[in-house]
Image (tube, rainbow, N blue to C red):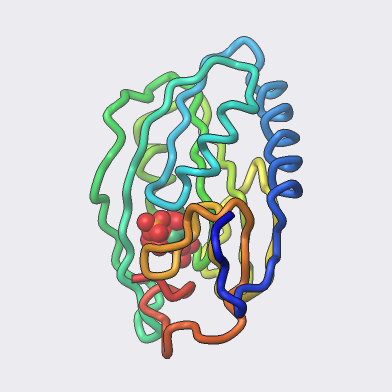
Length: 190
Ligand code: PRP
């Protein structure tokens, strides 16, 4: 067992996440029955969720990854988005499922979903483990949502604090000791 700091309060226990991920996997498989979708994980945070989700899906999948950085701050409502790594799989005419760990401001997906749509996929769906409406500027349609968590600095199950804690099997809120003035990213990353 990993030692978890005392100021980390459990928000989503591992078994609750696993149950929900299995439900989402079943629903996605029903919707994409007979298809072989391309599952696109948004690095790095989505890696854990994606790994569990594709194993809960009954349809065969291809997997690809993108990495996107956003440099937003409170004085720049639009932020700047940069694709650090794009998917390498052609998606025209294919069913695509984008997988995210968390939707915070919504900037990342607002940008990247539009990019993917320009490539004419047969369909473009979104699975997100957590939607966090508190500071949302763009709210994409979330076809498969794990949980809504209103606020808080979250770590675990892919979510990091200064690059650490993604490996925790549950999601925790850091109840004190968060980085000060952390709003380069709304969740305090980077
Ligand atoms: C996080 C998260 C999403 C994005 C959501 O990624 O994984 O991709 O932020 O934020 P937004 O809705 O405000 O755009 P981050 O850029 O922190 O990188 P990481 O996944 O490597 O931690």
